Length: 355
Image 1 (cartoon, rainbow, N blue to C red):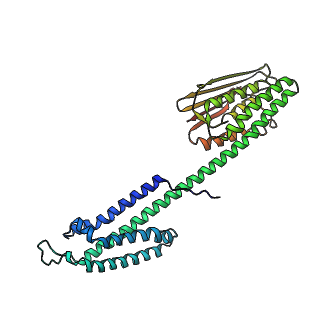
Image 2 (image 1 turned 180 degrees about the vertical axis):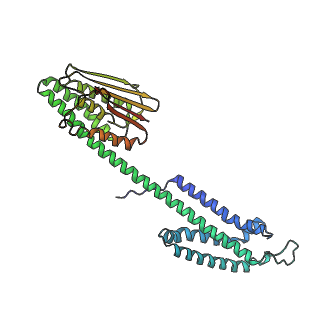
Image 3 (image 1 turned 135 degrees about the horizontal axis):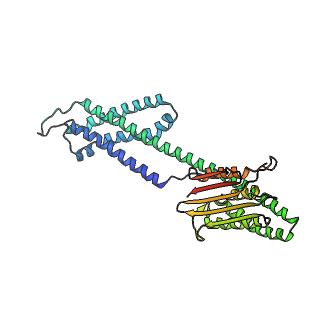
């Protein structure tokens, strides 16, 4: 079912204000031209006897606004639109002046009370035609601006829906990827330490609650995400040997209400545990998180052990998902640098997110 977008009350109020301003111009412009042309009439008399002109402008404005612009101008039928507008203005101007000739004759007199010839009729005709052209132009401008605003709102809504769908798809991809990596680690424990494997399964059940529920939200609090990361690191420690050193430093307030996209850092940590550990050589992993006003810093450093081509298969999937999520969630508000040191001994990943 298509979701119907309700009009924004603020936009409706702005549109009403624009109509009021337009009608102030439409009514005031002819009066200004009349007084500058030497026609002696008060504003009260003009409003009382100029109702036919006001009605004429009203008809031109709303026939354009409701009929000609949507059916002809928006459909690209420019010639028909201009022709019909010309005929409309000629017909309404002729009818208005015939009516004025009949009802407004007594006001074409001078201040001395005698018969006064006043300005020629062509001045009034030119006045009304120019005002009607202005009225039609204002009607088109308002209608076009309203249409552009609606199109822009629809485009933004479509872009938002597309982004949300893509983010949801990435999060759904992350769940099995995370679960597969963790189960592989637990499977490796079963062969030589069943007790540790049992503990790891219990830790995993807690982590999965976060993955399955909190990951469905767009944002979670930073302290909650840090709790998840601590638990994940402890789960990874279970299978590590004595020649692996893991250092964790989290400088985030325990009651931090800063919000972050869930699991945005987990692939970086997974990557460190997956590629930064050697079964034969001493290895290390250093994980540091810090929070500063408007920014979240993540720095992960691990020992670098070059892998064979077979070992590297599928290793970039998680990091590629991180990059896509960053582009969708924090476009232009993050800095991510990663690479191997010059001595080829360590790999460092630094991610700074601007909140």
